[in-house]
Image 1 (cartoon, rainbow, N blue to C red):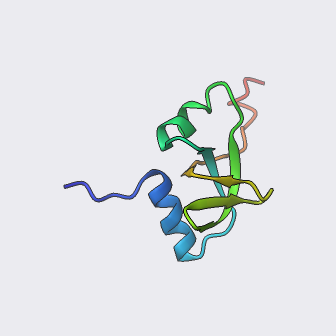
Image 2: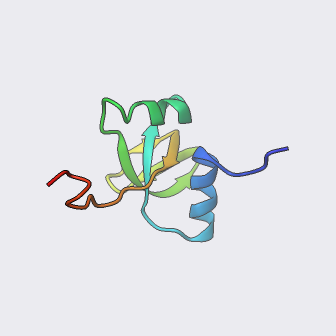
Image 3: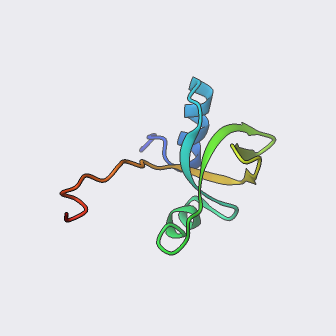
Length: 81
């Protein structure tokens, strides 16, 4: 049985641990939608809490699903310059 935390479950666990402002892909339908929307849309948010079944981001917007993502700065080599 695979009991690794992923998706919104991982975000809730990170918040419970005390993490602050977790960068996430967000959506109101599913974790899968949150990640697929990254291809053509900019649905990312810094999640600060989970309460009453919703994730709350720094702008005050509520989301039903929030998948932690990694955002890192590009290097000059990665940018092809």
